[in-house]
Length: 242
Ligand code: SF4
Image (tube, rainbow, N blue to C red; front, side, top):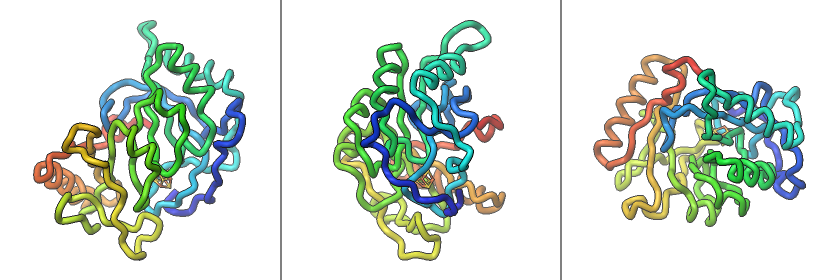
């Protein structure tokens, strides 16, 4: 995290019968961002990422992270989604790290057949055909993303810092995510959100500084009102949930 994680290679070519998960995953929480914000969800956080963003505040690269067979992960997801009232949660969020770097085919097929809505949160640099069965939310961290991801994305999400540059025309970030002092790059854009092909959500960067965070929240509101995007607040943090 915070740009210190090891850069992990893609394992998409693996058989998908096992996945390396972050310790403590899956877990039951409230989805804090994007099109399903506010909904109870089972989160499956997968180990590792091929990128190293300087502002990343997610733990996803411990050497102790376990590798489980997908059949065991299915049991854990079912158990995590059993609510106190006896109703079964049916929203599964697969996130990371970068979840698409591991072969998701078996897990996604099981989840869809079992009645789960599956949301995948990705930086958009990789593709697998099974993603067509999911709700893809892309949070671009690079200037170019995979064309299939761009085409199939349900929504785009951008992290906003009041001190980072934004494009005058669309208000979206021009930011070097891999080096805070590096040359800013225009992060990949949705193909055409004005046609309703995707939705654009803005989230304030958490800089672990109350003054900076307040400025970031105000910047989210300003950009959303100016450009017609959806403003978000990372709700799970307000509920003190993971
Ligand atoms: S792509 Fe996402 S998970 Fe990977 S380092 Fe960047 S912010 Fe963290």
